[in-house]
Image (cartoon, rainbow, N blue to C red):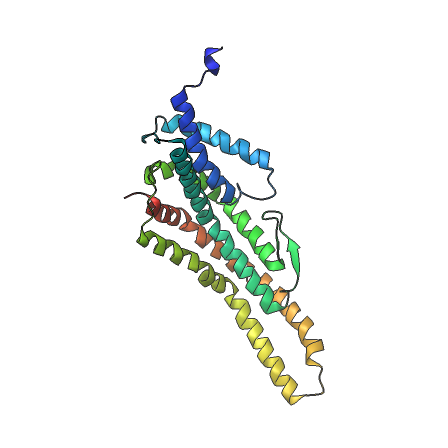
Length: 262
């Protein structure tokens, strides 16, 4: 056999361990885990990244599993850690999508859904629009590089086979997840105020002028004002997304450290 093709057993085992966590991250992380990316390409990219990371991390400092069943359980734990990191990284997009759902509901587009190529599921119009606006900001600011950094640095913060999630860490993660609703409402707040004012005004008109068909006039009026309002607040919304990404890296490392054993 060609010596260049020979792979040491210890190095290969490290590669398998690294692949477990990297694969978990790649499955859920934004951009890398998009549904419109072919599965083969995802697998090849995960394998390539694992190969590179193994070169930096080898030899890994961990105790060998005593049994095959123990090794499988430990690898499953590594995949779980990777999936948790990837899900945490994707929360920022869930925030934006939730805000888009609220805007659609306020305007009256809540019953209209389109297929999102990134997730492969049906979402509302402005949820789709804001998710792609956030994706543009994400790529322009090189936030996808942060995902790669997190993959590499996670082995410093979370030792291999050393996952131990503390109660404080769970509370922190739940608080961060709850931020989806809080920040989502912030995104939709201007539209809520505008639509509430319009609904209140139309209600007053219907009481004072019963002959006017408020439903016939009100619905297209709300849509027109809603679209105009979205266009007017587009720049502040873009800046709001930029603000979310300024602390993106710190929040990721702040959260994943609680998966470590100490």
